Amino acid sequence: MNSDYEYRSTARWTRDRRGVVDAEEIDPAIDFSAPPEFQGQAGLWTPEHFLVSAVAACFVTTFLAIAEFSKFEPRSLEVAAEGTVEKAEGRFRFTRVIVRPVLTIENEGQRERALRLLEKAERSCLVSQSLHSQIVLEPMIAVLAPASAK
Image (tube, rainbow, N blue to C red; front, side, top):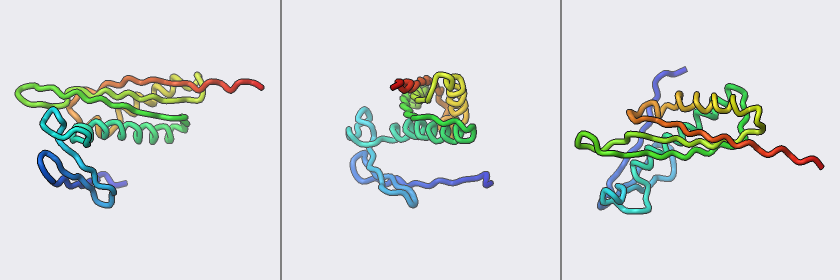
């Protein structure tokens, strides 16, 4: 197995504080802007949204790989992520990212194992482990209601 991987993307300025980002063999390109609080245009993706979305997407794919390897079958998974940017030492940076996975499982007997796998995914996520921000995991487990007897 290869131990080095490279991922390439290109960001191109289009006008004002806007641009387009694309990557090899990936469609479509994505329009982006600085956030409105930094004189960007509202309603477009921002680099800050890309970073927080990368944490959420990485958590999903990491959890699914761990679940598959562990022969654990989740019913559904949705991950919300929230990044906090603060000014410290004269510059802005992400200081914390809260990861809020909502994992649906088949029955209550899976809860403990599900929590362990969620925690393992948080520790293993490549993107969040590459950040200098505090990563906070706030998991929620939903259990499917048992089928009613007929």
